[in-house]
Image 1 (cartoon, rainbow, N blue to C red):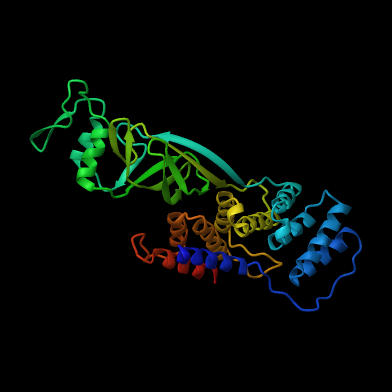
Image 2: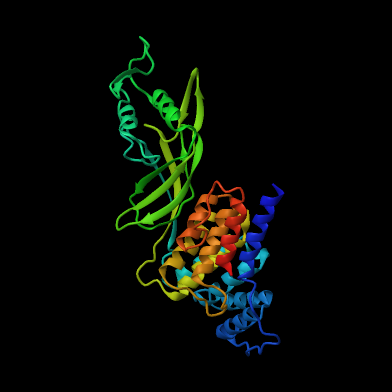
Length: 364
């Protein structure tokens, strides 16, 4: 446990370095005259690494004119570096985008889908199911007496129960494949899904990890890794993965820039994503990672007041957020999307160390 905690600390620390700032000693401070004077003084102080003074100047500007977005943007970036402002920092980011006549691009969604009789809603991609497997699965609710490979198979002879159900199907699959993870894909009718970590099985009461997300023209394909679970219900014992009628619920975040979304608004969204990252367990990992990933995918990102931020590093920070919240499969998926960690397998004895190293490479 100490080794895992150490890796978490190292990844978070690497993320923080990106926004620590490179500054010039003894900066030349501008004359402070009105809103523009305080705004200019704020950015000079920010670039010098004096975030307290920068925040003071931005707040003085806001007091002079609450209708202009520029000082809110500065205050939002200062909040990333000032722990006393972490709780309210995102409010500056929201105001900056709103006053810039923009629409906040990151949104949270919830959804639910149930597995169907033929396993077509959640399609099993691994293991590759055989014709015999599909025969058993598709017999749900009908007979429990089948002819398999020219042999009559009676699954659970009982005068009280003559139809196939998940109990018998689970036993069949377990006998063939054991307790391995099954991998599934399913569709969500939203092409802008950027961040999603787990799907919960309401029957097994267990989370399944999202391996990756592929956005299409009208929907997104979710690749899901479902663990085996042994579930006791009364006197019945179910061996289960994602089975017929299992209700699968999930949360996901989208990133969608509205028409007229500006580079100025992008800077506010970047500050929001960095803030969620630095807040650690108190940050919103789903929305924060969506902000960083969405912005990084939209265009090569830079911030004029700090040269150390790049699209790759933003994706690295999103992976670090997933890692620090123990969403290891999604973190690996983010790394692999940029060509890092391609040789890492979940079964590796040093998987967590290798994953941390891949994330650190993205943050260099």
